[in-house]
Every structure is written in structure tokens, then in C-alpha cells.
Length: 361
Image (cartoon, rainbow, N blue to C red):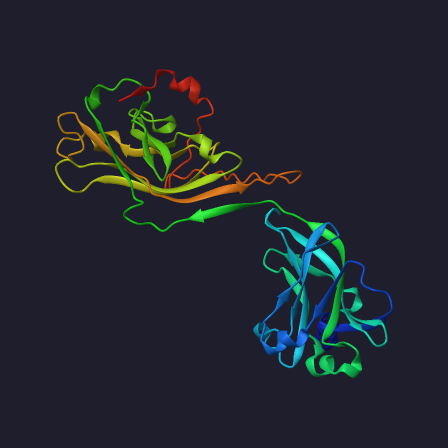
């Protein structure tokens, strides 16, 4: 255990160690010459970002903090960094692994002081980390002392070399969730007359819009599958699948309800479902027993009229992030498992055949 701890400490020290070397060869990729450097210091210019330059197929900048990077609490040093730019077209999860070297010219000896991460350490540039470098690149006092050769005639020269070792891109999805509010909780009312005379197997409500999606209520008055003859089956159906192509999905926390027209004790069930192109329905085979529904005095059928309601707040939309070129497109679809306690998924693999006798009430 003690040896493991020592190894971890050593590795941590190595990971933060900086290698300094001298070379007469100028940097291969970029040189930044700054004249009147003292004016940057005296006018308290926070930082200077160079022109963009290309290296390893990507665009970069040198960023110099003449008074030190105050965001990192740097004092009495110049901070110099390599920054990746022009990344807006990259796909989600991109990563670029780089070994880089930053230079400053000793003009008296005509040689460059080079700083780089020790042990050939690679730095990972990504969407949340676009800048790597050295907080304490060189002490300011050492830098401005003309005898050291870094600042001569108030002019200095920095440089950079960038070697891209590996590039990665991943695919992904964007999940947008919203809080449940009264504004998001749309209610659709479906009044069904002559309920006891319904003979067809399927009935659908008119199309209604909730959460920018199109829906219908699907009613099977004689039940489906094992619920046939004992229960009515009822489902919420997502109609317009064009909004959830490419593996996208929609999370809806919906309520299906049969209103009690005599009392305020309505019969309802609530479920949360992820719906997608292969799972368009959420609801229950055994929504309510027929005997209970038809019982006189229960208030669910009055003058042979049944009033069905659907509350449909759309709380989340997950869309696959599709990238251009050779980037892979993710299939983010999720199949919800069946459960009568929380809403079951209705298998309508042969829906087109069954729907041939569908009646819109």
C-alpha cells in the first residue's frame, strides 16, 4: 500500500513537471514578435492573442499574459499558452491529443529557451479545455532584464511548435428536459357518444397538439389481448414521427382519465414513457374494468356518453446529434418495458392490418 502511494505521488509530480531546454533551431510552426512590450505591462493589458496559425490540421493561437494570468493567481511571471481556435464545426465529444513546445528567444545568444511538459506528456484539447500552457512561463524580472537577452530594445520573440498525436470524435445526443408547469400541462377532452353501441375494435380521438407534438387517444372498448371482454384498453399515441427521426425520443408524463360526470372522483392512470419511432404508444391494456365502467350510478356513463381526457406534458426531447462527413450517427432509441403498474408499451407490429376498421369519433 505504501509503495502504491509513493508511485501515485511520483506520477503526479511527473505529470506537472516542466522540461526546459535550449535550441538554436527556431520554432517550426509560429513566431510572435512583440515590439514595445513594456507598454503592455504598464497599461495593464491582461492578455494578447496572436494571429491564428495552422499546425497538425488544426488552428491555434499563442496567448501571452504579460503580467501573468490573474485567473490562476499568477504573480511576477509571464504566462504563455497554446489555444485551440475555430472549433465550432467539430462534432460532439471531439478530442485532440497534442505535444507542444513554447519558445522565447534569447536575442543575445541567438538561441531559444523552450518549455514543454516533461516525459513527452500529451495534453488533451476538447470542448471544455481549449487552452494549455505554462502559468509561470518565465519570471517577469528575469524577462525584462536586458542582460538576459529576452527583451532587447523593448522587443521580444515567442514561438510555438504543435504536434498532433491523436484525434477522437464521439457521437452523442442532446436531452432537453423541461420543468412541469401549468403551461406545459395540456389537456385534451374527447366526448364519446353512444358508448354502449361501439362495435369496432379501435377508436381514435381527433389529433391534438401538446409539447409541439401531435397526439391521439386510442380506445379499445372491448379490450386488447388478455383484457378482451373484461376491460377497456386505452393508449396515448404519438402521431407525427417526422420530429423524432434518427434515434430521437420524447419523454411524456401523461394522464389518461375517464371523467365522473356526477362526482369529482374521476378514474385515471398516469405514466411516464419514452416514445420513439418504434414505440409510439403508451398506456394500459387493463385500463378499467367494463363492469365498473358500466355500473349505474358510478357516473362514468351518463346518457350513454363517456368523457375521456388526456393530460400530456412533454418533459423531455432527446435528439441524436448527427454530424457531417464520416462521423457516425448515434441511434439513441430506448424501448420501454411493459408494466401495467406504470403504463405498458403496446405492440402494434401489425397495426396497419388491425387499423383497417379504425373509426375516428
